[in-house]
Image 1 (cartoon, helix red, strand yellow):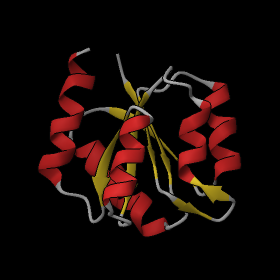
Image 2: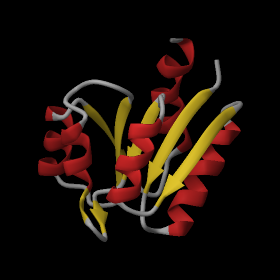
Image 3: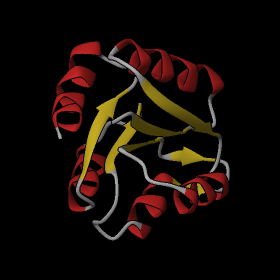
Length: 118
């Protein structure tokens, strides 16, 4: 089964880097969106393996998107350079894994392993 990943980030270069890193780990489909409105549309239209969501987006806080998933659906990853204990704890309460920008390939590989094995 092909893995499907949704990247939600308003920074084009961040989306491109994450896409390249995901594609380097094997065959997958990747969709990139720059805001929450388009992310909600994409989530409503299909099945996703995982969502990688930045926190600071032009139309709101990335946590609000994760809250709408209510613990169901795809794996959730907070992908941000806004590293604080509070953001890590908030991600944890939303059943999301925090990944720090710039992306560390070993950290990405570690979170992808269980998804690919499933």
